[in-house]
Image 1 (cartoon, rainbow, N blue to C red):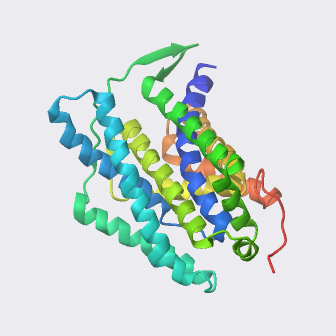
Image 2 (cartoon, rainbow, N blue to C red):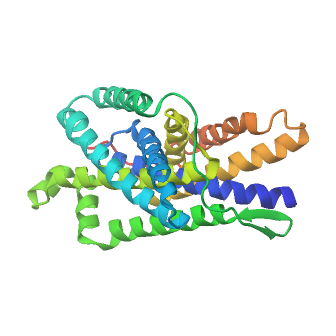
Image 3 (tube, helix red, strand yellow):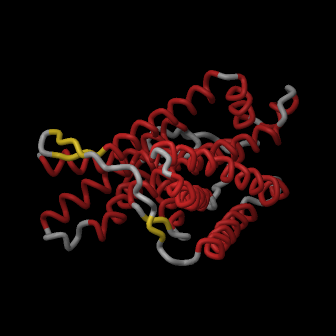
Length: 307
């Protein structure tokens, strides 16, 4: 039971990060049917910018929490600007092109951002400054830290805030109308280009915060850190139902819990031979299983192709 509770806590922490990143994937796909494979690199850039700012601010002797908040506040507009540039320069000219063209472009943008980060921050693993003192709390034989609590709370706040924005505001209504039928939305006076750009910018802001979360949790930042994280977040979006916001949240949490439980129980039974080294396998096995029996994902709906 102790193992279950501990791995559940670890899984919910990891799943919260997956869910936040998966929201970016599912928002972009929902509005223009594009898989933005460069989204994971926005997470990486958010972590790297925060790493740089924290290194600059620490010598000033400021409060650690204020430093992290300022670093996050600086990472968000940087990622938002890059997200807007990606949409404006790379994806908008290909909006009417065959679907394979923007997909290949997204992979190319991902590679470009990785190598730009390599030039700026080097190829070495960077020790993310752990300036916030870790406090552990014991619950029923398991341990949860203040960092894990902060990650889960922030994720819930961001997911709830995004849901309110999309389902309870005029901007969200315009975004959903664009996702439903862009041509009809344009005829009703909605600026389609603006709505798509806003979607990319919002997804980039979530990615920046996720990058700070990952760096703070694992204590490491690397120019390739967004590749596997982005792939898992995409898998979470597909698992929940690509284009479905609640599905992305559910898929992220499910994927994180499955990874943690698989690594904890299988590793414990095999003396850690098949534990954390194979945690990725458990997550993708669940994804394959779900898609075999429900190709649209857990919360996805079968829809016909658009005319």
